[in-house]
Image 1: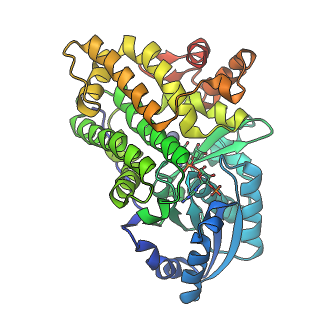
Image 2 (image 1 turned 135 degrees about the horizontal axis):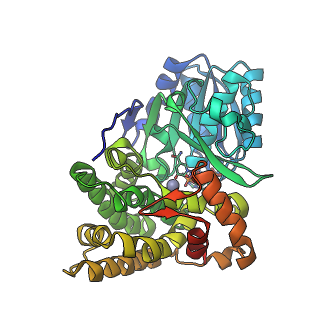
Length: 396
Ligand code: NZQ
Ligand code: ZN
């Protein structure tokens, strides 16, 4: 296990009905909020009306910005930040899924600095990103997640897409931790089955990616990660069958927040290589992030982890998916089959060609994956360095 430092500073309120405290918590953060949300769901479900009344009850002033698209664009971030500056907003409320929360972090950054967000993106070839990342300062942020997926509500990551160049990349830094997060599982009851499935595949990837290639001796993190994987696999199917199942939704929401936290990642000396492989797919094809991860994870297990770290795949299968084989190689294979069956039960087994990805496009996607995800190292760090040809093989 490697040495590590833990910072997990967001004040979290968790529980059904906790949304009721929104007005009071917002009032403590600033004078006037930019209320950021997506284009449809919060309006359709009545949540936006409810949030607006909660703010009005406490006389919190706000300006609404309701244009965040899934896989949020840099142009939308700049537009939202300009609105915040024009109206003198001094804090941001994010009401939505990972896309809304990520965009809100970026808006909070740009609203303070006045620099376009593209200056901050790690993929930006102009090189300015080097001096601006990590982000040290942004307007205070309050998050209200409406999907259990990314953990963005309590982490300091924001993933954005520059649509003209198709770069999907991230910013991070101490300035991006939300000050307050209100996690109310009831807000996720309206998430449709296919988005719930994609979200659970994303939570699973946040857990397995560093676990499978971990340094030795990370016993605490391993036990914690295995518990979360087992719970996500189990409760995903309950939430898909019965969307207002309180216990399942609460379990998924808390698991998603903890999945991408120091409690699972620290000390491993490993990151998220498969995320680097996936990001160009949402950057070029606007594919849902979790769907891309589900498709890519099976070939990644087969081609990379099975030969390199079969004992970790075997362990994951035994601890999380009921695999009983005693031989590590057989257990690793059984684990891949168990994950495939889970994806089938959730209805997310497809091929990239189903999304219009052609064979000709693969070299360009792989180049972006390695360049942007590899942060200039020339490869994505997995159980071995993943170079362009490895990434193409996974896509194929
Ligand atoms: O766009 P709206 O109208 O809001 O609808 C959304 C969207 O269509 C809908 N939705 C959200 N809450 C709902 C709901 N529908 C019904 N009821 C509700 N309560 O769901 C759809 C997907 O929403 P989105 O926010 O895009 O999903 P998710 O939470 O999975 O976020 C995905 C984004 O987060 C990034 C991804 O790359 C992607 O851009 N990630 C962010 C990370 C982070 N900040 O740490 C890490 C992740 O690995 C990931 O990369
Ligand atoms: Zn993810």
